[in-house]
Amino acid sequence: MAPRRRAPAGRDRASVGGRATRSTDVIVKHQFTPASMWPYARFEIVLGMISSAVAWLLVAQLGVHQVALPATLATVTGTALSILLAVRVNTAYQRWWEASGTWAQILGASRTLVRVVVAVTDAKTAADPVAVAAFQRDVARRQTAYVTALRLQLRGQLDAMGRSELAAHLSAEETPTVATADNPATVLLAGQSRRIFAAFGAGILAGFDNFQMEVALAAIAVQQGLAERIAMQPVPRTYAVFTRYLVHLYVAVFPFTILAAAAHDQWTVIPATLIVAFAFRMLERIGTVVEAPFGGTVQDVPLTAITTILERDLLELVGDPERPAPPRPVAGYLW
Image (cartoon, rainbow, N blue to C red; front, side):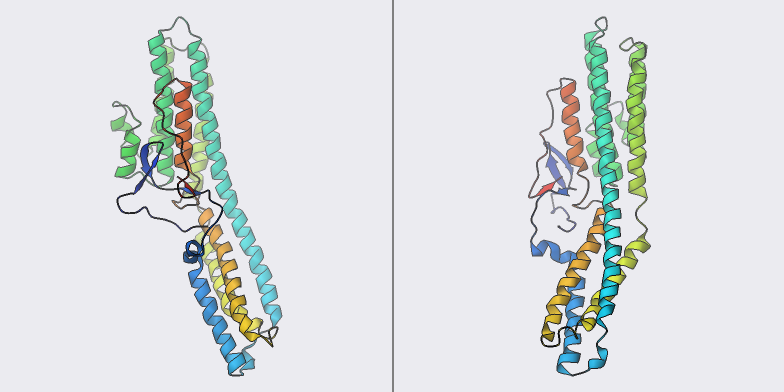
């Protein structure tokens, strides 16, 4: 696990697919250094060091045995706290997994949309091939702009930098409207629908072709709503604060409950407390960082890489050679 990172000065964007993007990533490496984990658990480790040192000093050195607590207190409270932390981590991971699944659905529906557009329009031998090719590219590029806009919205990055990144995917006609919209993704999805019906009016599409494409757009809109719900409705803060305080209380009390069990080697209370403090804090912290899959941490769903992959796929479907390079992990992180 690694802490939340800020990009170095002058590098607030990362290069993904040869294009500048905001630097938010997901961990793909398998090993972590103590230095990378220290920021997560430093308070609990220091608290455990102080409480265990005080317990050892009072009992082993000064003989104040009255401060020793029953060992069953550590057993019962430790078991209850472990169950609470397990539930919290599971809840957080379910949110992360739901967010990942939502984006998988958006990818699948976007590919379906462009695939149907290409298959249907290529079969229209009577249509103007230039107009058909332009329509195919227009749909593919607008869909790329859509997922870029949705990524920026979910991560709260629709500032000047984010809107500049989005503008690179827009046509000159759409830029004034989309780049200043409160919800650019919804505006782009509506524009996609209008473009499809305009193609129907121009004779590029016929029959029920447009309704097949609307099915894909409807599926995308549903998944957008699910993703927005995850982003806007976090786990209640009282749950996180309550769990953290319980961990702190347990770490502070724990060394006083195991002094009797370590009668001959009471100094071992100190390392034992540090291990318990580290383990419980890391479990609590995992639940905190994973519960916000669009929160801008290294545990995020890798939306930038996902949108880059989708852009490559869609442009390949319409025969556009100007595709970004595939995303690659950088120092164990996938942007």
